[in-house]
Image (cartoon, rainbow, N blue to C red; front, top):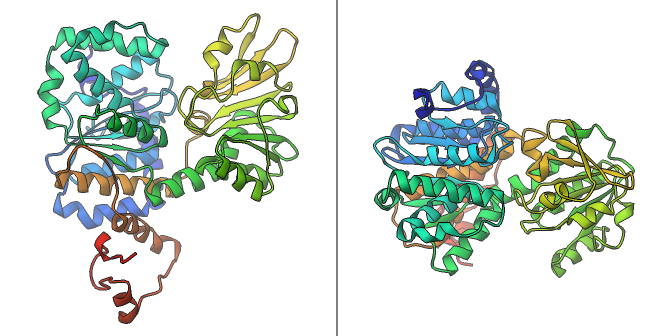
Length: 469
């Protein structure tokens, strides 16, 4: 291995100047993180904390990384998606001597190598805190720990290519450094999870008594979910479809699979562009909400040949099957903004008899079926907003990442039992307050009588116990 690969591995270090210019621009749109630097940097709240990040290596993430460093954390970073890295952002971070292992178009083998490098601090140390997006780093460390207890768990037949890669990498790690993770696991204090899928996995692990360390559910904080999942998707959905295909959305029929937080605002975005939007849903409450907004709610099977654009927005698997794709209207567009890699049956599509695959341009593939009809698949079924575009706007990510930073400070300074926690309400409110001045909002102030009625100290910080109801 080249010595520099111990320090970083990025696509092109010469892009650092370009990345720095965009990073400086993004800082103006990320007032929450900049306020945290000004407020907390002198206190050094993350001093001696080793933080591993497994989160999309974008310009906005670069602002988060530099905020953590300004708060005196020791940071190592990898992307959580093989397509989402912005190479100029990775280069801008690498030249600041923060170890980063990420580049666009990673293979799956390279991706998991990067994850391992981000977890490996000098001196055979591991992280104290993990900032995860999608559960990958959490999965890896738990499998690693389990394999050191019983190596035979790695001898299973993998369910897919990626699982086989993980198992093979863990076998190599166990052979080279046996019992390493049992040693470094003692220092792992917390895991914070950024996204819906990862949060569900954490709750599953907790219920099965498999979770080894406390975890915090950042995803469900209001200033994360309502900004990232709602406002972010509202602005970025049309962006990635147009960047990838240049099609006109007006007059087309768009199906949004799922009407949760992400689906609601994806549907709204497409309606604003003049599309007729149809919803598929399994939850009766969400289906009723969609109907109240005048959306047609039906099944995928009912009208497959009528729809032009398909967007999966759930965290579940096999939402669009290969049989669905085979029966779609000619020139249909298929993409995913839900779970990273299993909502659309692309593995089966690639093995479908007599289907011809043509790459139009990066992240846009055309599949031609034997009867002559074709569909366009964006971002190889992975997150299309980061594969075909640049993710959510900086201001949206400022809310999400300010949440993450406050979570890291809180987690590093306190001890908790093994459980999955939520960010306290008063910290969620602090995230919102840090962004109000930027957009010209002035809050109404309570009178002392009103504050007394709610048991709130108007002169001090908000605390959960202040609320009567």
